[in-house]
Length: 351
Image (cartoon, rainbow, N blue to C red; front, side, top):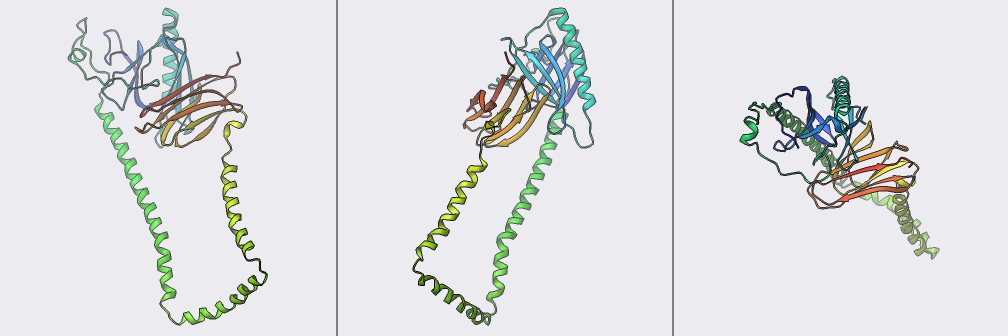
């Protein structure tokens, strides 16, 4: 992990305060020497430094919400590759495609120059950018806010307070919308529950209607007496009871056919609580939020499939993620940690 301050010979090239990196709200800063990622949820965590020499590929695309996405393939110390999907969320009537394209062009240019000069240099990524527990949050010390070894004053890259206000405003608007939705649902439920009571009071007030109802009740009585004449009353009584039982068992069994039996590549997520997930191939990362057992098809063939699934609660329940190809599981992982993350890197290329 690096320092959130600039070196004496370092300058900021690009910066953005509203991106989502593998489901993590974050800030990104591109300098003349490195790419810096900051977790917007934990202000005390040290930022993640990514040297240009570790960036193997840079691709662009869109997610299911048609937000621009920038995918980075990073070389790790164990010579594996880890994909970071940087999403540029768009507000109504806002287009961030040009911003994403500018970031992609600058990162490509600087990574090519760095690799020509010094070759490929792996980067060590720490949570939340990879699966694992978050490191201990560190306060800003006097050495960090003072001068470096060369006597240069290192100012912070960007102020953090305005961004915190923006995020709190968004949370308040979402909370208000949720409260309004709950009130509407409660009102509809109350109307549906109380409507039969109001309608039922109308026929009970006139007492004169009671003898009139007794007249048609005489007509079905001979129909009832005709049934015991056949002396087979238990058989028709048993048949209507068995019919709903058979239909109730066959309907859910027919709808719960496992998606991995279909051809192609699928991801299965099993968790009783809520979770967020990003999955797909390089340049085609999709993001979803759901709960329970879900299946999602991935349009991939002879490619590398990446998936990152994070629990959104502090329970110790088991989260299991599996990748299937033509009905056969090719990769899988699980976790029981609170707010745990499962990351899968499946190579489907034919060796």
